[in-house]
Structure formats: structure tokens, C-alpha cells
Amino acid sequence: MDQSAIFSFIQNPDASFELIEHFPFPIEVYSSNGSSVHNNRAMAAWLGSEASISKSRAYNILTDPIANNQAGLGLAIQRAFSGECVAASACLPQAALQKLSIFASGTKDILFIPIWGDMPSPEFVACVFIIDGYYAAGNETAKAKRIIEDNWREPFDLKELADELCINAGYLGTMFLRAYGISMQCYHDTIKVSHIKDKLKDFELTITEAFDICGADIREGYAEVFEQITGQTPREYRDSL
Image (cartoon, rainbow, N blue to C red):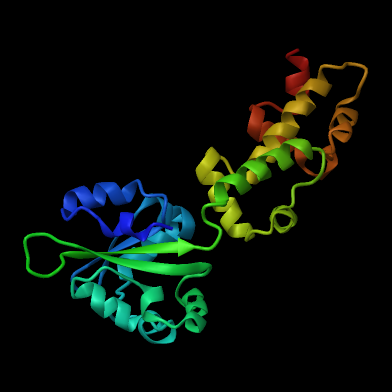
């Protein structure tokens, strides 16, 4: 990774915040007193929006014993708040880098970047999380989408799908939602319901048979899923044909 591109951050708070929002990396921004003041979209997607809001309201990196002590980031944090661009990997021995996962799961490195205003010291510090496999997420979500499309008859199992792709299930689900605007379960259900609708057009099939052919058990509540997606019960849909 070319860290120089990140280290050449524009030294203007307003412009920096706008740029940070569009970065593909998860980024958290701290004020000069260490309080979290902003998570960009990638950070919110990584944490989950509710967790992101909760963390932002209460978190202070300067007083966090996990970040400063257990994860060994104290020196890097001090240097960043003193005005220096610094990577955690430059302050920790190679063997200690695995401790970064204590602070943030899956993190390979963390870049601390001061953002200057009119004061002689940094007005903010941006914390950029370099996550293991983050760049592969786009490919993995596309693969997940194809797997769902090819296996729509089968029950959806997020853990099984994530294991097949060798990626964390929660992370895959979050990135899929961010990429396609729909959860993986809902996407699977939408495809299955589309096929059920096609089978319901065959009046030689009973409604139950149409569901069974598509791997959906109407007796186990899938009629409710059908209604949630189409706005009609299976009977109402068939009668409207």
C-alpha cells in the first residue's frame, strides 16, 4: 500500500472531513482532546451504524487503556497528537502487530494522521484502519451474490456461505448490504419469491406444490415472506393472474 498518498493529506479540516467521508478505508476522527467526533461511511459500515454512533458519543482514544496499553498504541497515539503522521507498524515490533486485533478486529495496521487548522497543534487526528482482506471485500460480495443466485432453492445460511468464501460472516453481511443496499437474506428471499411467482402461473400446480418446487415450505411460514415481498398472499397473487 502507498502510505505516502494518505500522508499527503490536505491540511484543511473542512476539506479533510469531506475527503475522509469518501475514503474506502474505515476512518475515525478525534478532536485535539482525544474525543471521537466523526466516523466515515466505511467505518459506520464496518462497525454497524448503531455501534458506530454509540462508540462516537463516548469514546476517547487518549484515555482508552486498551488502545494505549494492551494494543501497544500509546507511542503512536502520542506522536500523532503531537503533529506527526505515523503508522502503528512503525512503532511496534513485527511480533506485536497481532495485538492490533485487540483494539480493532482484523486490523493489519493503523495510520494516525494529524489534521491542522489555525492552531500550532493538530486540530484533529484521523485514525485509518487497514483491515485484513478489506480490498477483497468487493470481490467477495460479488462472489456471494453469484452463489446466492445459483443456490436460491437451498435454505440461506450466512455462516456456511462466509466459510465457503473464507471471510467473517458479520463483515461479509455488512459489506454486502453496503454494496447492494439489501441484506443477503432479503436478496435470497427476493430471488426465491420471484421463482415462486413464476411457478404460481402454472395452474396445474397447487400453491403448496409451487412453493415446494422452489425449496420453500408454505407450511413453515414462507407464505409470510412471500407476502412481505409482494404485498399479496400467495392466494391473492394467483387470483390476480
